[in-house]
Image 1 (cartoon, rainbow, N blue to C red):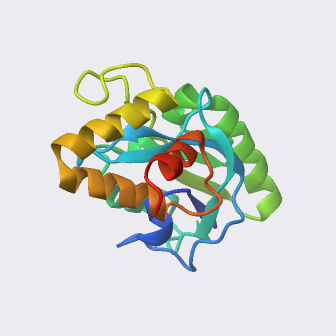
Image 2: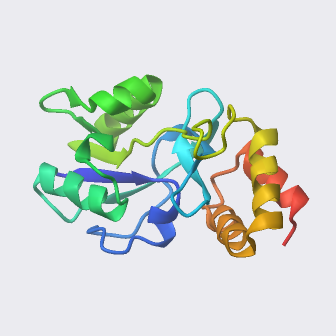
Length: 191
């Protein structure tokens, strides 16, 4: 089976042990992306978000693994996800789609399925993580661009290392990923 791995963040510049048959290229579907998830180490990271995301060109790479479940597991491990249910997928022959992805971003799943059909792949997989910004242990309030900037300002004043990692992640994001948060970060903390 020929599966595409979709990416818009660190998978592009830091694939680590992700097994791809070629490098990521900017030919993936347009998806609503924003820096609306807070990682375990405090970075604001990119997620599909149908409410706040800006439509951005994404990247794709062919998986080097022919076994679809092995490709899903390889992405789960690279993304340090606790279980494979958070890996989004569409598989054309069976018509199967990830339940988690359908719950979190159904319009994006439809866009991805259409892209898979037109691209010559049999399936696609991607990190189907959603915003956790509002979680008490993360941002603690509903996501907004203002809240994201305030979160980064708090990091800047309390933890210089976390702030530096957070800023580096935003700056390393592929150039096609132009979001309102990235625009505000560039204004607030120019290079």
